[in-house]
Image (cartoon, one colour):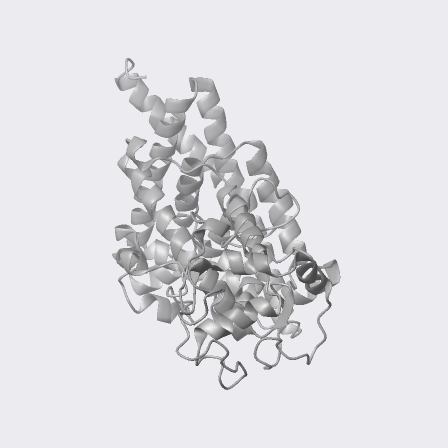
Length: 438
């Protein structure tokens, strides 16, 4: 398939030259610091008036915070703020998800509250929402450490910012490339938006012809729940759902029959998934796949725990060895990546396509190959451009092989009831064509 692509492309290019020889991815822009925290005050308490939250934090013993940070969580332990069941150690203390989220939101959003009482409102499970001023005050009194939030946000910003320098859209002259870069920006934003749905099935995904990419401005980036961030099944389904929405944003795809659209999704979406995983993993990681929001399910986890959670350790290794490492060595750019993703999706080798769809896919793929060659010719000498063009197309074979391996592994896992993959993931896996690999 790939050799045919290269052959047909070069045949067409040779003919053209003979006729005309002279034409040779949680918003991390703001990192919390002490100066960014707003005043927490109480009108009747002179010591608290107009004091910033950072000053209140500084008034508590640093030694106490360190001791609390070293404390080990004991299941069943109460939240030290409200007395509800604690979910773990958050910001140095045993606390419930409610108080953890409240403390984090106050700091990040620079909230300011005042007490309508005497500044000593009771804070317990039932009354914790009655006075936000006193609740935050108690968070500080029991030792919640706001400096941990700085570290957490800086770490996420570094991970998210690290993968690849973004291409300036204004500098792109090729309309095809510009459109693909815009789609990639939307793709990354929708991946980390809680408002972008995970489809339960292919039918549900295709029932609406309008892509969420066309409603892009309505979506905002929101912090995902911790259980989703650490859930491999969640991210597979999330990426696959977003790949489908990405596909629906192409006019050529929208005009196809229902059957042809499903065939393309089933044939190509897993390949798009594994290439996305590899490309968007930051360069400083060579032994793991990092989730789209910048978090890694591998951090602080043993191999046994990872195996229990994902059931896909062999496929992760396959992605790393056969895709991530090779594209790192060749230093694949963002423009090359978006073109390769589209070339992979519009695959004329997809089985069970109608004759009409095959023609549409062939035409679109030729446009994408032309755009890739034009881009490479503008960046490299002719021999270097031809070599890189071939090297990029040869990556597609490994992408398809790893995708097939991942699909087969998922089917095995479900058969033996080792885990419960998302319904959309399993539907695509079971309909995926058999491919020989490794």
